[in-house]
Image (cartoon, rainbow over all chains, first blue to last red; front, side, top):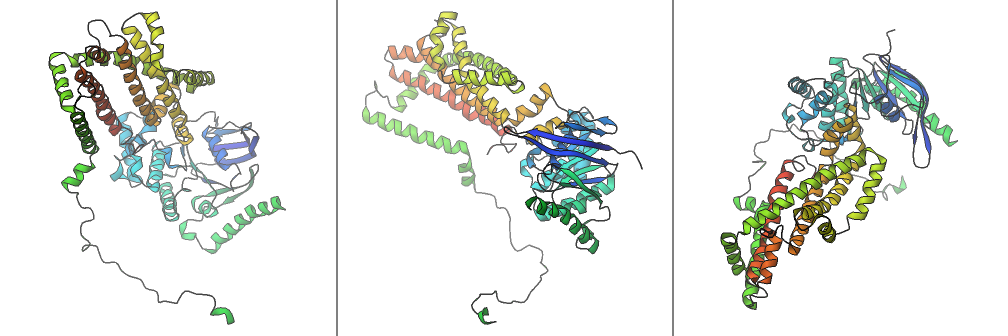
Length: 258
Length: 294
């Protein structure tokens, strides 16, 4: 097997609230390989978002280490572009094109001219050519998320980090965005680490699913889901996997209530 | 079942599916507004109408009172305004005021930015800013004039000193509030790009907090303008070319009441121009265009 691109080894994450020291994850291990669509799945409180943030370099593990291509992750950086759930992730003072260019020029990766060219190409990929010179407040939620995805992909990062990127969208748009993401992946075969709490979304989007149990977050299972996309929804194998994951998550809840 | 009749149920209807014909007969989706509608939609038109109504009321009341020493009618104030501009150098006086104001305002803005940059980067700075604004923001700048006169003497430096005081605290307070209101997502997005330090402040925090900063600039301008006119009522910028406040004071002493009103109208006009032209232009190009303000 090839070398893992991202190695998360024994990572314990803690954060402080004014009254408590909360343990978000406890000794989590997983490995992401190039071109994986790696999904972190679990109920709220399983620390999946915290885990993604620590891969992003925003949260330092109190135990364990995170290595990307062999070197330890210490601070945020443009080699790990994030797509957030919130629509306000796009600076409102920049047009769609400027938003996609912003990380390219701010990180010094490209000059203005090349950045503009690349921004145009990626805006076209997500089908927003007509809106390139519009400010984000004129766009719908789905379009804003498309811009965020174009912005991240244009950086051609080592790994794309997506924190429930479609959770705030309506069901129809969400479905369409999942399809588009798979289509983009089919084309460029980037590596993505994707956080969700929807079993269905995990199976559709993911090639590999890490199922996590809550309070604190621990790894419950790692499953293969490469065979499934939208066409598989409702199929027998899809349903079986869905039920299996459901039981894993649900069993936990029964235990903790019992 | 016996109670089927008691429970209401929706009636069974046949299903149907349609192939929709292309639109065409619906007509225009968007119809241009008429000229009058567009005119009345302009904020400036509506505001000018309000000013005209107020001026008419002033004229009517002044004519009815017919006591120009207490309340001269609008027409004679306009006469006096015109006369002051043409023969007594009112514009020159206004310019003297604005020049002093600009100095104090600029120094205040720079200091406010410096102190808020300190406040967002260190905890001591943040405590310092909170304490200082809590102490000095409620203190009327004009109350510092006697001390300023003691320190800097009768002249422009004293005026600039009180102006800086009137600009610094409200602007620092607003800017700081704006910085702290920048959402976590936007902060993370900025740091994700690898931005830090002064570039992070300049490229993320300042534009993201711009609505608050602009509000602070407007408040600071109004504070400064009031403070300046009030201070000039006490003494002129220099004995020969006093500003607008001094013009008002002089004319009151000589009982040229229409000229006093003309001076006041000038103060108001400059205020309106700043608000209605300068700040509105900045707003239209920034926060409105960005959808951060309606």
